[in-house]
Image (cartoon, rainbow, N blue to C red; front, side):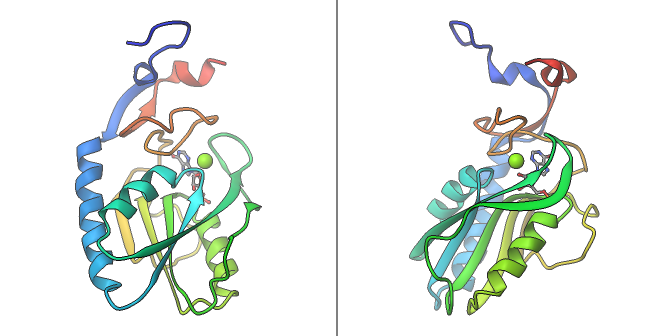
Length: 188
Ligand code: IMP
Ligand code: MG
């Protein structure tokens, strides 16, 4: 329950698709694998804002190797729930990635347009290696194939919120991912 004029964000959720505990377990597994794979290489995590900030924070704290952080911010959605196909860079990298081992950390891959664009963009800057870790993946929705070395959950092609993912900038703070009640879209 919340007090004051704001409603409880949990009350706008119709169905929880993946619980906080399931997410924790998955991240522990991903972190173990990444820790092993990068034991002998300096790792730079590049998070894609805003959605990946929650995942990046939890993943980074589960890794047992030294890491550096950088962030990019991109906008890929024309409307709130449909991909526009146009990717705009809102914030570029702070550091050069030439010769670095880069792991691109994404919240979710839907059409794949955002990640394909970022891969091309980052490759052009000459990293020593470049891999993708995405917590959620709407498999089968991608227009072009690409390799996700560290995939989290396959989810159905429905619009989800929580754990960094938003609808109209809301619901990023939910600890799980879920589907909104139809009434939540109508509100505003
Ligand atoms: P793509 O370019 O279609 O792969 O979309 C990727 C970006 O769209 C993600 O980084 C998210 O910010 C956003 N996105 C895709 N699917 C969802 C969803 O179900 N809920 C919230 N945001 C989403
Ligand atoms: Mg978004």
